Image (cartoon, rainbow, N blue to C red; front, side):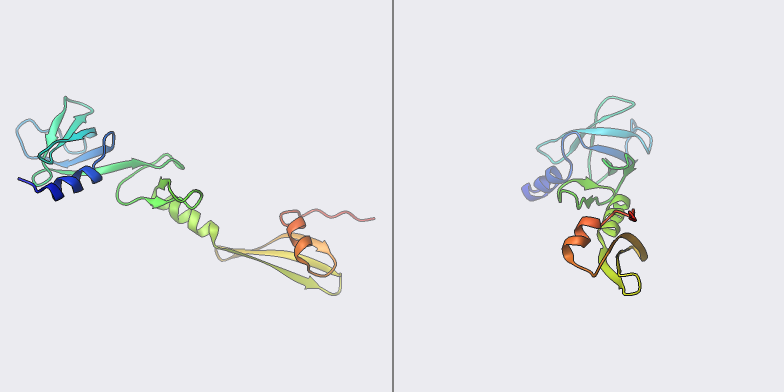
Length: 159
């Protein structure tokens, strides 16, 4: 029999409505490995009640059966297992590790200016993921206000 602490851990890990995949199950009426299901509850013994997609609900005993949590990424829509990443956009949405890596790399950027005395022109540069790009320019020496105004604008007007 599981302790209250163990049951509490199971309840915090396996939440109502969470999707799971059966990896291995012992018993004569077990669904086949790979079967997907939805958690209905964790009972007072720490057993997980699951409604399997292809058969009626059955109990999973973690000490005897193997399941994995399957999550769907809200960004790319792909299913993934393992630990989620936390989105940098709101610091609370769980996303797949691939989208988490992509967001992290997009966040790593440096913006700076390069001044050309010959043309009296300032180029706005951006370093992101080992790539340097010109993301804007303006005439005159570098200043913070103009850099903000012309960032992302690559057009010029000549008189």
